[in-house]
Image (tube, rainbow, N blue to C red):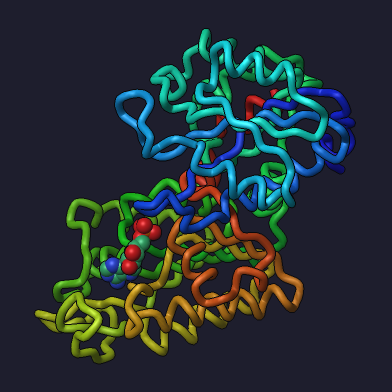
Length: 398
Ligand code: AMP
């Protein structure tokens, strides 16, 4: 069931918050258009209904108002191409006369892209008057920007109060994001494994703590595993370690034991004599890494152990790589975990991958279409699984 699909946008001006925060090179060419592509089904549905689409987004982090480098005008041509040649108009301000006038003269099936919302400081401040000005541009408000759903900005949340409940929608991307996140969070089939990796324990404490109440197994890989090794008396050489988080690691292990959640730490590691692609490498138990060496990937035993847990799980959540996958010598653990998730998914498990680096890994190693869902929102997804209410979701639902 989709409230968005069930609605007929004919002759309606749909004000759609998208996340077009795409990377541009020095010549203003878009180097990765995934975020734009992700919003196309929502835009097409409104166009096909005979509605008018007014798009608002941010781009980059402009500090001092309008800056050519951060102008959304650089996206107009490509957006029209992605929409099969549909007319894409551009307003060089997201509020103000030109925007209102252009919006009022639009014909059904046309698209208007507004200039960068963050040229106004009021956007990030969640300013109510600014949100009200934006709201005047549309008859209905559609939030399709999961990437900014964890921010209570003017266009992502505050604006909702200017539309009655029946005129607020999730776009198709948001619907899919919310549905897959809710499936994992509230309807997970057991066994449920959460695979948490990446550099720092401090970034992932809240998500691990929240998942202790839901998961049956938690796999901890990446640099953060060595803080756990050290906390339990291991010797980790010059591996990444957060000395001020040793007690946190012990607390997590204790809570997991109390709750009957099995925490899996890597029994062995691929170690290196320096943090470099051409480092000398060897294998060692993760709690016995010699001085002068550092763990940069999970080892072969750990890989097998982790993959076995993944393959018997019915629900799989993955956030964070198992090692320094950017370097060839240290990517094996991350690739093997991705392959195990793909394998389990093919056999009927539900898998959700989110977080910048795990998403980069599944894309780079060509597993994106072999998992159930790849989230577009790194920070938003993390906060969702930390158990926080996301303002961009609450604004549509409440
Ligand atoms: P995060 O943003 O916290 O998810 O961390 C992702 C980063 O952690 C990636 O750039 C990885 O290269 C890095 N990483 C993963 N494992 C290790 C490790 N064992 N030592 C140092 N960095 C790591």
